[in-house]
Length: 110
Image 1 (tube, rainbow, N blue to C red):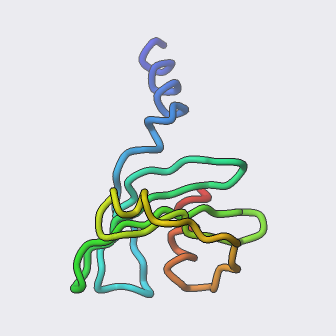
Image 2: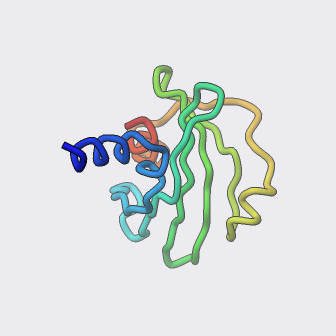
């Protein structure tokens, strides 16, 4: 019983959502995407991803309105520091089906 309770607590904790894992992006199949963190801010789901491809490594933080299927960049750059210091988009944009934002959004909105 104690083990079951501990497992339930861990699954519901914020740490359970911060474990790094790979996601497949068919529209950018030559790159490898890793989810670094997931969260929530002002009712929007947030996600930080790392992209490794032939052009190098880049990081992006996006905010998703899962109900209205819109997204905006909160930051992007070649390092986490650059991502955090880059300006956020002012407005949300519609998500194009099959786009990178669509696949990342599916992960963010889980």
